[in-house]
Length: 125
Image (tube, rainbow, N blue to C red):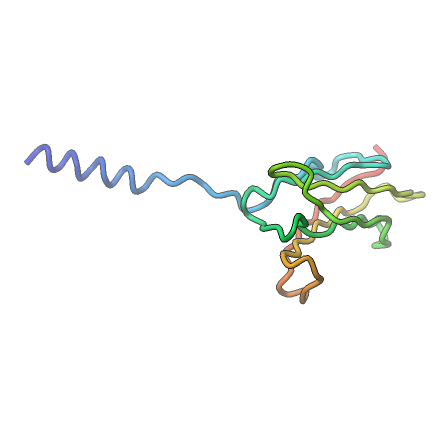
């Protein structure tokens, strides 16, 4: 009887142990990080975002006024990472926004279906 209880407790404990699945891809740019041109954007989708024919999606960089400064396409550069290089001139803007857009079919899809990750960045200290 004791052995059955121990097995039951062990089984219950093992079922409750779950590996947390990441909800967002890993990006080499952190929120509020100061960036300069050119910058290489490196993304590890962590199994959260799928790729299609070596393409993960797009990257857009905006200044503090919402003006687009640069855009690029995240292409496979290794077994699990995707990269693009952005060249930009922030002019007088001190802050901006880096937007990663997941486009699994490689084409632009309807905005409600598009997954995106927005990272606030800075151009000046």
